[in-house]
Length: 335
Image (cartoon, rainbow, N blue to C red; front, side, top):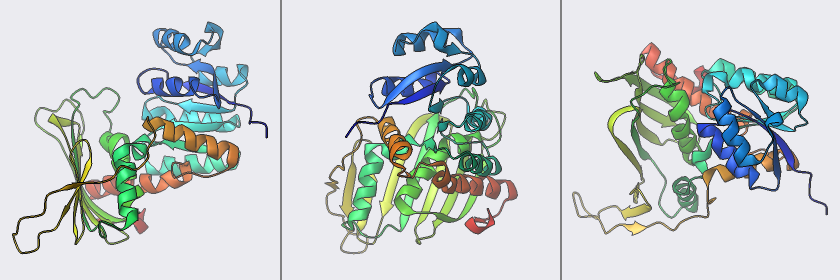
């Protein structure tokens, strides 16, 4: 059987996070980059070198690239605040879209964007690449195996040394930019969040105009409870992830998951930790995104990272923001 014609892609935003789609797709015969869009001549020149595209395939506006290029899909890797208008242009032109996380910076816009994609009859995905990382693929596999008990107590803490706000200086930017990854991972492993109680915070030395950290207690529909915290204003990078059941605890040690069975007596000494077998994962997390995007466009197999499915993650983000703003617990059914 003949292989499908490669998917032709326009790349909007070709610096920083815009580099990975160029690197991955130029090496993947299922895709052919055909146009580059950026406001920076320097970044466009570097992208031309990487892809081999001529200067005539570079544009400073997406609408020009859409009108002058034959393409099937648009890859958007701009600051989050520009995702919705750019994706909207692509939908109007009948193009499939992959947008970097987070999909948008608010819940209402996310709902409208998914509806616009469905009206246009195109495929829409969000690049939640963290879920394809080996530690998340292995954790999800370990939980599904049933060999480590039923998860009930979860701790996920991620403090980051990111002192310069750059494009993240708007209300709850840390949620829409970074918590969206954490929540996607949590939902992939434990299902939807039923309710959230959250408070945002800052530090005296912060350069951010708004709070750049958030802490929360998350109650999942399946009964699990997570304590969650993240910030961009830490003085040291710190990542901790524990998943406890009645039988013991799965703990991420920075390189692998370790399983430690529960002690046999009160305050007893726990058995020595044992490594958790690795589950197969993409060599690069973004490749998992690309593989699912391709199957969605060509075979109509909807992935968890589709815009429609990603709304559950965005709902959890909205729960965090609204809980912090209103100083109350917010339920899933209230969003």
